[in-house]
Length: 430
Image (cartoon, rainbow, N blue to C red):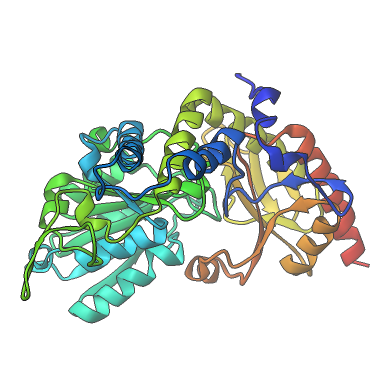
């Protein structure tokens, strides 16, 4: 199994930091990843050497800024297998990208269709825009539920997919369960009834391959800051024929070609959807983040995470009272029977494909209390409802603790986390 080189970890300056006098163990990558020096340098260098507005100047500095910004679009297009950079719209984040789609879909999409389908796994960002769209257009919003094994219930999806469904919004990786949804199969099922598919790739873009052309995805959204890029930059991929039909989400400078007193004509793709001065430096740094991920390799990143997942789950299940959220089985050997106890399960047990995102509860202990003690030892994890309240309600809980990995996470860090977690549980149970 390929190992992630320590030389890669050394590229992240913040990981040398100490918190409360202890070495930082950063396990909140699901919220945002840390940044390698090359990404930090790219944004810094832009402001130091190239800062100018794009598409508006014929002087050299502006032309250089424009070239770098457009090159970043091309890098992202290549990274996800898009046909052209014209299908790549830079947004503020995943949330803005989803809102753009929900607000700009043409009326013809809903002419003979009255339903929107989302999964119960969705982040609030991939739910609230669809709730509003359903209210405004008088549509029915339906949920695809979980199966007993913790995966998305594809039988339920098949039963709810019909000719009335206009669009299906689905996460590639759950930000709480870590479940990896089979996007290929889901897209094929949706397209059989002529439903569009929006894939939220925020949690998967830096750990799993995605090829929008091969997978026939209609829309794909993700954030730069969850893929080792800067804050404040996100991506919407849309099939060109769909983007051409959609109205702009925001109006202003650079997204028009002509303006009269009474009307305007829109610019070409993708600039039609990028009104005003964009986050140019962030876009350039995002392109560098793509280069970083490609230099490590998605297969190596995924295998590294799988080693961590297998290891930490076996350790977590040794802690009395700890229950991993949504876990019914892992591989062919671990099965949760009750709090903190495991046994060998049947060889026919269906594997649960889990990314490096693991959430858990501990009987009688609130997640906020737990992470406070962990923080005192320099360990950063996330607590709360993680912006998936409908999912947690379905699972019968209100909050949980989440750890999430990245290319920089090590087994040694997980050992320290497990040790401090066990000690913290004992303290809080006294």
